[in-house]
Image (tube, rainbow, N blue to C red; front, side, top):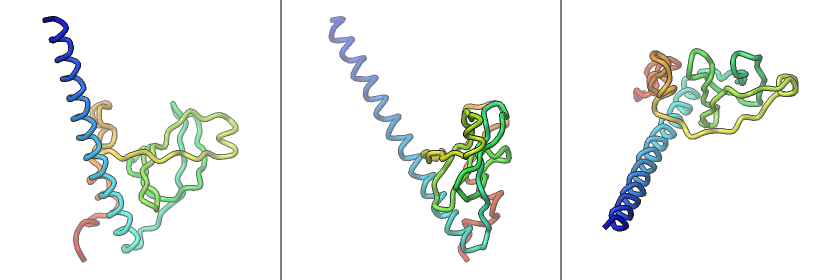
Length: 140
């Protein structure tokens, strides 16, 4: 009986993990579509992108990147580039990184920036985009 119970629990855990992964994938997909629509709206509205920088952990300096885009958070730790990619702009920076610059890798975007952080640190992606370009979702 205990072997059957253990097998059932293992299968239930696998099923739970699969459902969680599918839900997360769907959320990332919705966020990616939202960023793509925003980038098109920003271009159409003439919202100028700026150079994006990476901040060192603990406020230890910054490093330039080749990226241009818009910061999504007021602390400049997340951004969308002009090609619609999402970037987390914090990293452990060395002195060499700060001199030569860095090339951050795009990440899958969340629907909530800073989810799970301290109170007041999270913001919905659509709210962050609305702060950058009010009415960006409204049809012309």
